[in-house]
Length: 198
Image (cartoon, rainbow, N blue to C red; front, side):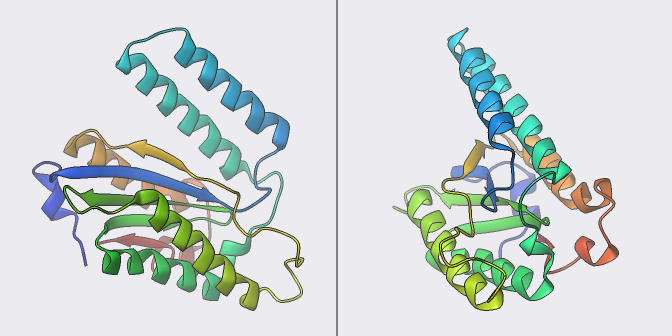
């Protein structure tokens, strides 16, 4: 298992990201489109990396607020058995060589910190695709009769926010750990399998 202290002095060589996956249909289409358009417009208006980064962080915050509002879509990750499946599959990424310093599962989405060691030859996209497939297959078994056969479990794609330094990583870990409390979720959402800090 990976651990946060190993990251505390500085980010190890490689890429560290904050990954967000969400259940299919968990954001109103119009609101989601508008946020994507706002991000694209903000990034097109400038060519500095700092401004692009700022636009990306603003998009993340606004999109996360939409997910947290839970105005549409399913809340399958409220089911503890399903949460255990998804949490277990996230940690299985470590067997592929990625590190998973922490994650939080919420009723309709998840956030996970992933570290891809330098020179590992690993592909984030392949790892997330495998995570999508494996968790969706198991979710269908757990949700017999609740998830229509033609319906997707996860929304296609994912959002990634690169982590720039150890200070930002600490802020992200605090954000993830406090997320269930901010949403006034029941006590069980504050511990395993919903929250993990390695």
